[in-house]
Length: 180
Length: 84
Image 1 (cartoon, rainbow over the protein chains, first blue to last red):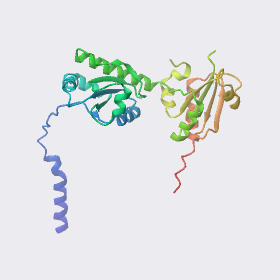
Image 2 (image 1 turned 90 degrees about the vertical axis):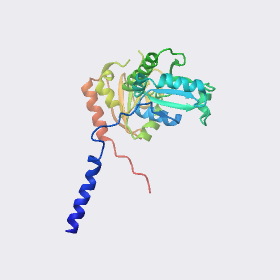
Image 3 (image 1 turned 135 degrees about the vertical axis):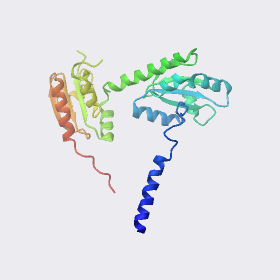
Image 4 (image 1 turned 135 degrees about the horizontal axis):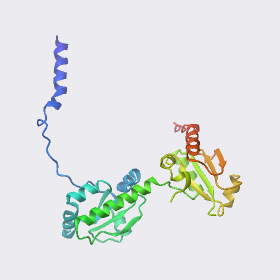
């Protein structure tokens, strides 16, 4: 009898989380861009997912950066589009100084797009005037990387290919051809 | 822009399972000689250690290429477990 009661209690406990919510009414969460805060992590994610990178260099303690962020990255359409890319936010007052040097940015705000191999796509997006322009740039970068990912990535250095094949335990396909 | 069988979506997808290398026969004579290439195009598949498992010359249709890629993957030895 004791065992039966214990079993029943376990069943009741297991079902509690299912029936104990707010009656199916879920709170609508306000969406926001999910920023990767470490550049190297964002790059790794972009490479793994073959996605473009939206790189935002700014400092939260600097008013123009805060204004820029809320103006462009608080927009619902921009937030929706940003899901198609990896969004990296580097704090210009933080430790990641190498990123600032690499992109020659002092404080920001600075926005630019990169492909998943870290090549910059076009110029910066610092002078946009409307959220639609930001959406357009995000969509363009996302599409560029989608096209890039669907292409065959031919290597031309045999030794590098061999090293990569060994590391990834992949076979090598070699196409010997000529321009002619 | 890819051409021939390499523009096929299925071939593109399968190619992700390989390290794809393009050797320009006019520029890399040494590699061409080492692989025993007699004419162009020549295709070769090597295992991850660089050992040849297949080679053929001449244009390939998509179906034939897909078969070759699948066969090569099937022949691929399992990775050696790391030594304890």
